Length: 365
Image (cartoon, rainbow, N blue to C red; front, side):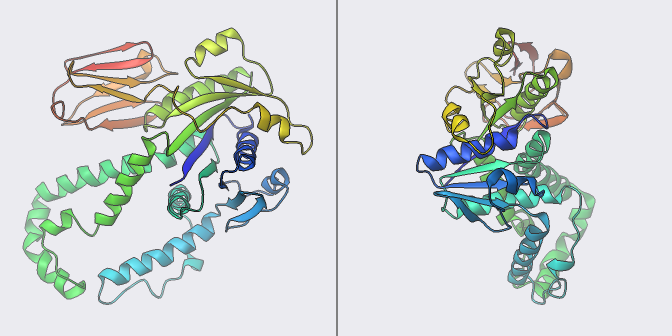
């Protein structure tokens, strides 16, 4: 399986430039690298020196590039959906609807891009996938789909099974499914299928995101105060989806001591400006971006002391909200909510207290 590396920062700080330099560096070191970009503009071809397409193509030894065109991904995904439908339905209904005529709903392109990364990862053709997203926060939304999707499936399945509607239709599920589907399902089977495969995909996505050997991010900033503030905000927001942020790339400048303290304990690497098409100085200045050993873990559970520590840099106490409406704990920060499912014996235990200390939300149960 490949390691996915992505970069987070304010628009204009050079995330794409850093991503390309990283891809070239790792490819030069002998790793099989795929550079996958959401940028549909011709500017990407100028930076790469070659125009990438909707399918991976060689641009340098050990390095391939692909543009994640949403329309092409939708066509491919629709064909996969029709194949899946044919496995379950006796008489498929989607066969007369073609992917070439489908329009894109807002936000669907992110889900399609995430699925494309999953497929390229599963192909075992690459050691590293460099993902160049469209915006830092959109990248976090995309990577958080498995976590949020899993919660929605889990929560609303329970609501449906316990509702009067669910109880009313339960006797009719088996005869109706026998008439329409390739095999009969009982009402209890709905808890496992047809979303069993989807649950497996969501679980796989969650596991990948929590493992820095599988998915890792780096902040990119300049000396512009707005860029620094955005990088800190994205650092904290990344913790809300369980994404490991391993370092800070200071593009075209040197950080002050105050800036180093603000991003501590992350290591900071300074990059020079790129001159013409010479990528070598940038490649030489980049550290080992596959290593996440110095990154603070987003979540630490201390079962013995009945404490949970959530790392939330870039936020203060007033920007963090903690609630508990059921067996899970909900943390709101950075315009995101995270529902924590804790292991036994802490699962379902009420919160006794919480404090914000050293950029951590410390929850006592």
